[in-house]
Amino acid sequence: MLRQAQQFDPRQTMCRTGFEVFHYRDARPEEVAVHHHDFYEVYLFLSGEVDYWVDGRLYHLQTGDLLLINPLELHRPIVKADNTAYERVVLWIEKKYLENLSIENVSLTRCFDHSRPDHSNLLRPSTLWRTDITARLNALVREYYSEEYGSAVCADGLFLQFMVELNRLALQNDSNLLREESSPLVSKVLAYMAEHYAEELSLDSLAQQFFVSKYHLSHEFSRTVGVGVYRYLTLKRLLIAKQMMDDGVPPGEVFAVCGFRDYTSFYRAFKAEYGLSPRACTGRNE
Image (cartoon, rainbow, N blue to C red):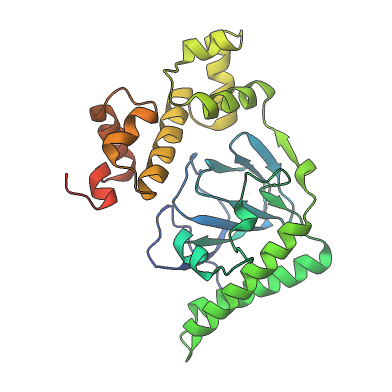
């Protein structure tokens, strides 16, 4: 790893093309809100007392665990207060970059495919696998920040090797049982929202749907997810809208199928979240 870990950068956007890698170590980590991003994320947990929440699934992390997060998943770390520094390595990967590196019958995005029946965000490697994967990621971090001749070329090669090994590990993974529902009620509500996000949903209607008081649902949802029902629903709708626009669907068609009442409300929510108008984000004229 780096001789000295980096200071945590709260940004959730990439500054470079291809991939970025970070080594963070925080004695007093900042709280990170529920979020999503447009790229794949690989997260290697090194130390601390941390649970990781990914769209209704809660993972209790152990040293050497790997998390794989795709752009359609809202997530956040839940760092518990103790005397152990929170240390991790985070790898961000552009979608198109990884897709273009794939060849026929060898998809490097396979490990992130959450639609597979056997998919788990968590990989818990055996000692042998953990040693190999960690060594490869160590080498990648060193070359990525090195100023020696050819370091960028070497980093690209190491990245490709790492992604092949990561996909091999994911294909052999049997860690579905290592995830837990953070709250049975909230998990059911999240599943319902994922299926009905295009419909008119509210705290009242969800409480009626699941036969609980809206006060209980609001408290349990905020405690588990870290944000309220309305905030989460807005993030989920914006996430899906952004993915649709990335696939070429015009903003004027997206808002209606993502549950926004009109284009104006969609525009305001989108710009507040991403700092750009929907059309500017897609490269179209406003």
